[in-house]
Amino acid sequence: MQKDQPTLQPDNSERQASVQLRLHDADLKLLQVFAHVAEAGGLSPAQYGQNMSLSAISAAISNLETRMGFRLCERGRGGLQLTEGGKLVYEELRPLSHAIGTFTRSIEAFSGDMHGQFSVAMDDAILTNLRCPI
Image (cartoon, rainbow, N blue to C red; front, side):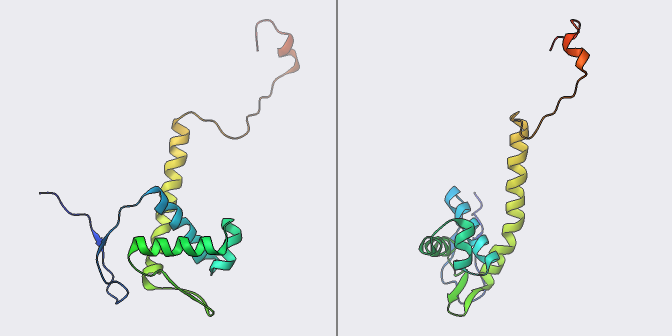
């Protein structure tokens, strides 16, 4: 018998039905947008860092809330306030972002792609020395 995927079920009334969450590439982008919104303290300040329009950021947050099955933040004239679910998602993004960064650097190192500056120092006499072909 197969084990079911764990479901997200907050204890508050924001959540009506259980949703099974499987992350996809698009979800990672939505989570990145949400993290920038949370760090910036609102949708308007986040639009410059994300190079996205206000409506695109709002749509991304709405899509992520739909995927998660609960509200992540309250948006209004009073500013942005993360819900309990939004705070949880934001806190869990830190180790996820770190793990993705570590994974990317490890794969790049393994693939042999060299990045950065490479300096070679040599004596002028080496250029004319036939025993040291360069």
